[in-house]
Image (cartoon, rainbow, N blue to C red):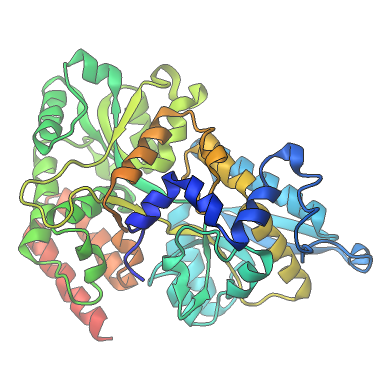
Length: 468
């Protein structure tokens, strides 16, 4: 279950002609029903009855509300918030009496503060942003807090639609649905690189040469906002995947991989080396994720390590300004002597929506309609075109042919050429271990710990977690 986005999944995204021909239950109904707005009035004519469609009895239903917590706040999330708003409006129109109560919460606050407390008390929102993996969806699902979606997916004809549900699946039960997929890599300012005579880095030597040249010329090599520890950990995770191999990420919780192995220590040592060389934003511990983007957009930094979900910013003139369509993207090059297939990418389908197991009959109807509308080809294609979010369901070749954004095209090409993908360790290790990775990376950046001391501390916490 922990081997996410294997090669067949990568190829399935870019070989959709085969998928469309072989989609079984998914192919006819889901893709045909949601191809475009112009077809929406007739899209259900040949499909099975919609379980969320109102009946005469439903039309007399009393008003009711369904709580929905999302993390789409701020300018950079405006496109996916617009998609959510449209899904909400469509679902409210379909379900008599329904009104959604939306609550926007910052990502880490929702994941690490609000949801854990609500799950412990048994009172989460009815619909909420949820991460997959052992520390989130699988843990809450095993505790009985999450709705098993497997029968609902079957009812809606979506059982074979999703590219990867591994991080939300436990013992045949599905405890959440990813909103999309992503990979992580380096964005770079094409104008700065051209001015300094730097090529897009394709080797490790070229990457480090670019970082040093940028630093020597007064630029920040890598924009970084480390006030939220998860931001630098994205880069750390990819370094581990290169130095210790793709299998190491899923091996910590099973004991097959060790945090204090020479390979993982080497990954942390490289990050420590870059800190000491001044490659990251000065004062990064005081800067937020949004500050990191701003430093890059204003031309103060030559590169920025981030997820493919950021791509829409660089084609939006209101956000990117003078940098609009002048940004390139590449994945971390191979590390000489690194373990395993160095073409693997850091990518996953780990963030989406979960649903409370405590639903009455009306709320269940609303949840089914929400799932049907959110996970349609129409909305998934919008996420790809408008926000650069890779689809979590199989899209037709016709749909993918509409992609014009150069970064999104590059991402799809990279995924097609990759040997596979490794997830982020925050979705594979226990919560106590992940908390330790956050604490220790901040201390490493501050010069209070070394790569070896961080690795030893992490392994001690991992050993304890594995024994519990």
